[in-house]
Length: 422
Ligand code: PMP
Image (cartoon, rainbow, N blue to C red; front, side, top):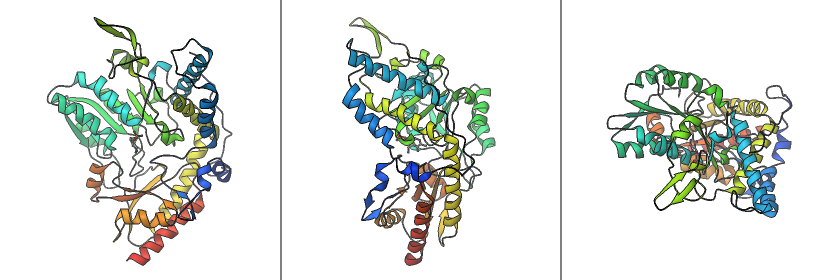
């Protein structure tokens, strides 16, 4: 494996200032397209972020110049592709602050990473009556994979409650950790409420009771700096497509001691040491968990996306998004009949809401006619919507390329709809 690529240093920027959003937007070709004859106002970055030119070009260049299957050929091209693959893994290692490149497993997405942990790490440890603790604000990706292994083993999934502001009730969470708790799965940033959970505190709480923790960082890594060594969790998952990278690539970070002890979860090429009909031995992590040909170009482009984000500076992006969020919260709260879901103390880059008298899907369609793309429905968090007492909501989510003008366009459109539909 090649040496760890140097972290790209970003120029320090004071909060909210010095961030040239026009220059950032210019790097996203899709942002200059139109929808229904109107300029696209893309406010669904929490579902998937748009891609900068650097990532689009990296994909094209890789296919044009460097593409071959990896870890197989002795020929130059395959070795070049393999070297780029190794570099991408090192970039993810650096991005997460992981101690060892072997802790980085490439998967398809955050969902697949949770399934891997549920099946390979947890299932062998589960028995009847055991519990997997999650929270009421989880995405289905951090509920259903646990339910599948629970159903097979006689264990059950239980949820720690949230309060009416959309914060986790940490005392109740601590009480739910009992002698039968075998795993805690917790989301870092809620994809519906935007709540930023105090994951360090939660991990410490669980570790004191000897309970392993998986952090769903699908909505976190694009907004907050991650240092898995400081976090001290057992597993962390994210998807490349939400962090300006291509779709089809995700990451599982796991402690090496866990990964080394875990059995494979899928069999095939590339994950073996030696195969014979009498028996097969398996490769060391991470390869043990990477059966078959991966998304070679996509993984390379994910590394480029992380470079791109680090080049912009996560802190500068976070400050820009915080300013957008404050403006949106203020403007939306003043729209008659509009209810913002939750009011957490710390929120990251998204807002969900309902509008009295207008179904969320209708709202989505009306906004779309104005070129404004928001997410509508239950956002893959049905238990959370049930807890909030709504069946569906609309969600606007922001990224590095979101402009103040787009927030204002959303607020204006919502006000018009609120006034004409009441
Ligand atoms: N967790 C959270 C909090 C999410 O928002 C999402 C995506 N909406 C996921 C997990 C799953 O991500 P993916 O569909 O990329 O696997």
